[in-house]
Length: 258
Ligand SMILES: NC(=O)c1ccc[n+]([C@@H]2O[C@H](COP(=O)([O-])OP(=O)(O)OC[C@H]3O[C@@H](n4cnc5c(N)ncnc54)[C@H](O)[C@@H]3O)[C@@H](O)[C@H]2O)c1
Image (cartoon, rainbow, N blue to C red; front, side, top):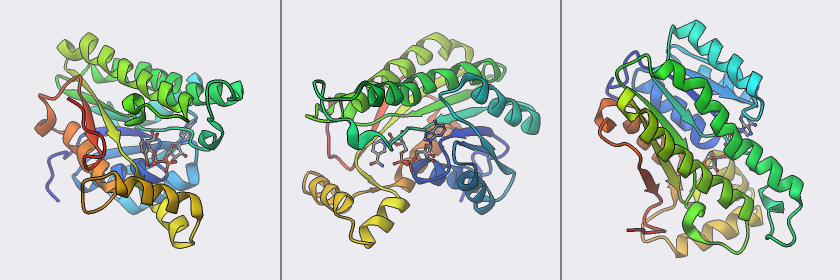
């Protein structure tokens, strides 16, 4: 692995499992110093240990402003500054109850927005004052193809992700001239390590989704966490410097937009 992120100081919100965990491993492998922040501290700690280098874990609930502030402070204390952030966390426990606009329990809607959208705003507010101190820094958000896919279910999730795309464009427009780029990775259906375990155990829901998405994906395989980690590393490096304000579809072609 090349060292194009050598010495870069990056915080990853939502790093204990899946795409965020793969991103922590990838950034560390490319030489970054990484703060792995997650509500699941034990998970983040084992990811940090596995990633090696100057990587450490911190507990954060991104729906709580004080928690976000103290996680960012921990990163600043350890690294002396920040060059990048990957804001990736989402509360996916409630997604199975995200039914439709008539039926949805508003608590499911509120929780989804509190973490997936308001939480991303809180993380943005906490990192920008540090990122603007550098001439070149970057924020990468994870949203989803569901932001524009149009689906009969998951309205709260889709609304939260469309909001993240809007937040990203605002940040790119407002802070681009101060050296902060902002971009979104919009994953298509992605088989995370956890999902793979469920599929191997023959859980019907992930199997069903995986067959459904494979039939709609003009590719040889479904996406994996590492596919998104590679794009996050690009966007956080000098190789991605001229990319700003973009939503990058990382989906094997399952959803093509002009
Ligand atoms: N896997 C997919 O098919 C897929 C598709 C499209 C978009 N995404 C998006 O990719 C991102 C990562 O998803 P994933 O599939 O890796 O799922 P995941 O559940 O493995 O990762 C989400 C991480 O966020 C953390 N988290 C949850 N609530 C939090 C909170 N309040 N504060 C801090 N951390 C919190 C979880 O502990 C977990 O580590 C999410 O934003 C998700 O919406 C995933």
